Each structure stands twice: as C-alpha cells, then as structure tokens.
Amino acid sequence: MFANRGLEIKTRGQIDKMRIAGLLVGQTLELLRASARPGVTTGELDALAEANIRDHGGVPSFKGYSHPPFPATICASVNDEVVHGIPGERVLGDGDIVSIDCGAIVDGWHGDAAITVAIGEVAPEVIELMRVTEEALWHGLAAARLGGRVTDISHAVEQHVRSQGPYGILEDYTGHGIGTEMHMAPNVPNYGRPGRGPTLVEGLALAVEPMVTLGSKETDLLEDDWTVATSDGSMAAHFEHTFTLTPDGAWVLTAIDGGAARLAELGVAFGGR
Ligand code: MG
Ligand code: MG
Image (cartoon, rainbow, N blue to C red; front, side, top):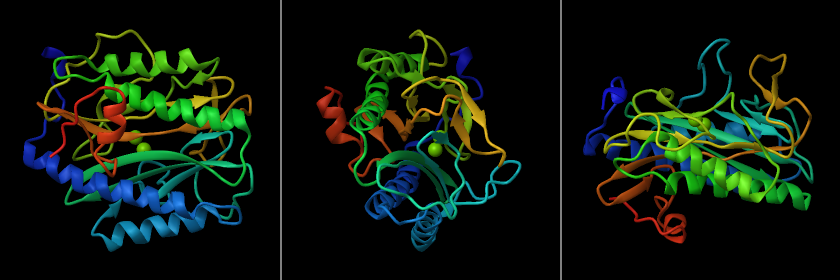
C-alpha cells in the first residue's frame, strides 16, 4: 500500500457528499445535451450550466481554475478540439460535435464529468467515434475492483478502443483522483499495462476520461492557452465520469442512475447507496 500514500481516502459520509456534487454535474450535462442544437452558441450552453449549478447550491469548479484562469463554467470543445475549449460566440452547426466538460463543487466536494454531443446530422464515422469513446469509459469503470490497481482501468479503456479500430488515444492528458480538489493523485491514463499504480480501495474517487480521435493522438495547445486540438485536424470525442468503489460494487457518482444500467450490461455489480 506504499504506492497509496498521498491519496485522499474518503469516509462513507464524504462519498455521499460527492454523490450530491456528482448528480448536479450529471444533471447539468443532461440539460446541456438537451439544449445543444444547431444555432446555439457554446457561450449560451455555458450560461445555462452556470445558472443550473448555482441554482442548486453549487459552485462551478472550472471558473478561475489554474493560470491563465479558465474563464467559464464548462469546457466546450468543437470537432477537432479535444478538451479545454473556451465557450463563447461560436455557433454550433449541423454536423458538428461538441465535447462538454463540467465540474461543480457542493459543500466542498467535487464532481467532474464530460459528454460529447452530436449537433444535427453527424457523419457516421463520427457517431462511431463517440460510441467507442463512451464505451471505452464504461469498460474502464467496469474493470475497477477493490484490491485491483489503477492501470486495470487504463488497460481496459485502451483495449476497448483498439478493438474497435485505428483510433488515436491521447496520452498527454489523463483522468485523475478527485475529492476536496478537482485534480488529485493519482493520474488515470487511458492506455497501458494492467496491474500497476495505486491499489483501488474503498473511499478512493477517480475521474476516468478517455479522449479519442479519428486520427492522431498528437495535439496542439491553441493560442488561448487552453484549447487542446488534434494536430492533424481529426475529430475528437471525450467522455468522463467520477466514480468510486464500495464493498457492493461500482458507483458512478456523476451518472444519473449511479451507473446501474451500463454497469449491469457489462456484468458489474452496482455499489451505490
Ligand atoms: Mg472533466
Ligand atoms: Mg477530469
């Protein structure tokens, strides 16, 4: 357990508080999914997200984060943008995809999740990219077991993506521990050999977030110092959930149903309360 030093291990009561933050993030993303359509700007989605989070007693965790301070409540990354896009005047059009990442703090505890949404009619290979990325997230979550290791998740994410086609998996950005801060130890890569990294124990909370492209895994940081875009201009998808393990199974804190349905499809016990 030496490798687990420095990890924040939550009590049951603290995990229950994380569920409240996680549900608010999940509900906010569902609101944005329903609102994202041709003609809507990413800035309008951002305003909806901020209002929903604040109306429910939360604080947007991205706003003011890091240096230069992130200026918005959501990240909105369109098409070849993978993550960390800054919402603004950009109008979503038919055939676009937008990856929306959202984080909120409730009573000191963080939730963090992301979805990629199709706008209007999107090319079939892009729909496939979204499917593969979301499935890879769930395969990663389903690979987590108490007593297992962090890279069991990484391996399962990568294996699923590789089994589906010649996709690019970002290596420069990873999932992460989460709790009293958004980004905590350990990193959760989206590739690699299983059986490595910290041991998965009750009370650990992790954000798993595969970032997958139709081309290269290489990315560039745009001039705004935030937006990460594919170097080859290929389309990219990003799905993320915050989750934990209980003695009963897995509990996806940012999923509306706690992950029960998707976990059941993969034969994994639901560990929510
Ligand atoms: Mg996120
Ligand atoms: Mg995250």
